[in-house]
Length: 126
Image (cartoon, rainbow, N blue to C red):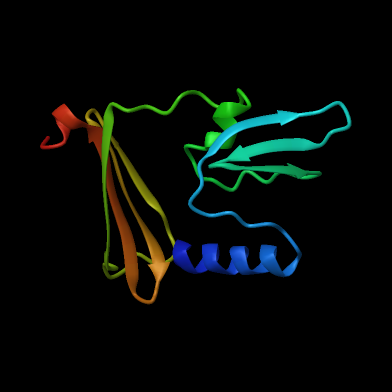
């Protein structure tokens, strides 16, 4: 399933369940009070919540603000494209580790595959 479809489904289900959804506002601060209530500052708004779901991706701002993830690396460049899947790809995910970085291919449905290449900017041509 393409990620954009999964994200749309998850967002709709969260709204249907009564969650407050605030898009386009970066989380600036997080804290948890002694009663376990989360205090969240996002953009110019403040929220209080019994539950906090960090569904903000691999380089999670939420995880960084909570000290649960290392700082995001800024020395790498990533290229990604959805292209017709090669014959024989099936449902497998392939990762190729290279001295300069890594590349990968994964099926995303509808006859397409996600191709990615990650390397430091100086090694991208290699």
